[in-house]
Image (cartoon, rainbow, N blue to C red; front, side):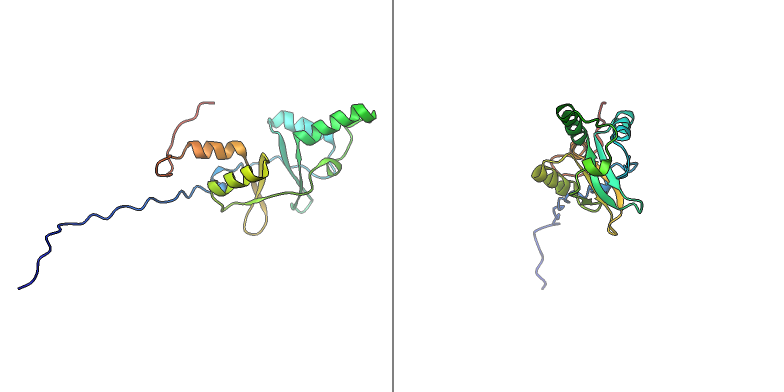
Length: 163
């Protein structure tokens, strides 16, 4: 005679999936980019018009060669008073940060948060697997993404944000 199991139906616990929210889900895609030959006056005008605080500097082939920020502009404004030099006509290539830390579009929100925390920067250009500039992610983008996650399971949850 066969032995019967008296355990009943077993229910397997669902594994909690780790969040798959990627940098590409959060990044800005319509970038304002600058060229090394542009003048500071054009950069400041673009910052004001588009309500941004920085952007990537790309060469004619679209390769990222630097990043220009409002802090770079402030330094020039401050130095112009001290050295009595007009700052408005200075070229971006002289003012931009040439060391650019980038992030890949397939990295997670947690990778981005860690990079922001460890570098103390406010924005990163986003590259695809081929090394092409495809977007930019900011601290705010990561904060919004994290806010929309359910903190218990880290699954995506749609929570409206008020602007």
